[in-house]
Amino acid sequence: MLKHWPPLNALRGFEAAARLGSFHKAAEALNLTQSAISQQIRSLETYLEQPLFHRSGRSVSLTDAGHDLLSTTQSLLQHLAVGIRRLDQYRKPNQLVVNTSPAFARHWLLPRLADFHQRCPQVDLWLFTSFEVPDMATETIDLAIRDDLSAQAECSFSVLHQDLLYPACHPSLLAASARTTLHGEREMDWSHWQLEGGEDVGQQGKGLNFSDPGLLLDAASEGLGVALVSQLLARRAVEEGRLQALSVQRVRGPAWACLVHRDSQDDLLARQFLDWLRGALA
Picture 1: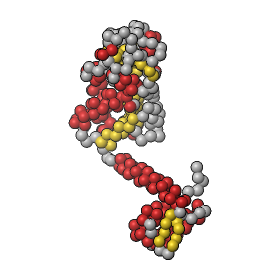
Picture 2: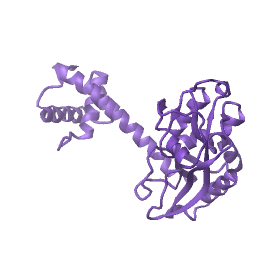
Picture 3: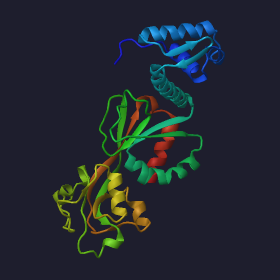
Picture 4: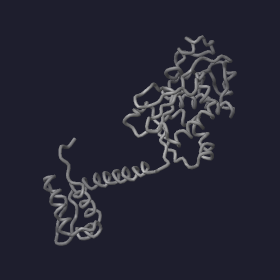
């Protein structure tokens, strides 16, 4: 990484002059004097130790190095503008930032969000999904709902729902003589089913492997094979006829838990969301 960066104003002046093809027009666009733009460009060229413009009277054109830098600078300024605009969300007075896994968001929370929004329209919910458990002490998150949580400093921890697992597949595969085995991770691994005393449903050691339990559930619902699925997350697929159990047995699954940051524990929005969540999980 560079130890010293060129001034941002110099990059803005360069981008405007290159885009408009004129120091004078760049000065007007940025509400500066033409001499200020010229000075910014000269300082940038000195820093880079090479010219960025061909100068001929009042007209200017980019050198090869200037063309290269223009592409980089425009991308940098665009990303910076987007990042700054994104900060607006932190000024929203009724915002609630909720972290969860992509699987829970897609298969359980998303189908029920309309109900929450109808009940609590004043809550400006920001759903932040991640595969990794967030660090609640350093990230701007009010609460997290996941199946891989443990206690963290500066947070209250509570278990919301004890999940169950069972083998399932698409109804079209029920009569199939051979089915591909779909493998997940952690509790969704078939070794967990066997250790918990689950019956043999024809699962094999080889097959297709998924690190995301949401994709594992999608694959089973699409008829790719038989998988060990979450009873909680699979509920909608079962109701829609896209998934059917292969056994009446159920084994212990992950515990869905909640972390609430201490700064949000007495927040009305967080309490409303948690009350709704507990009712929906019941």
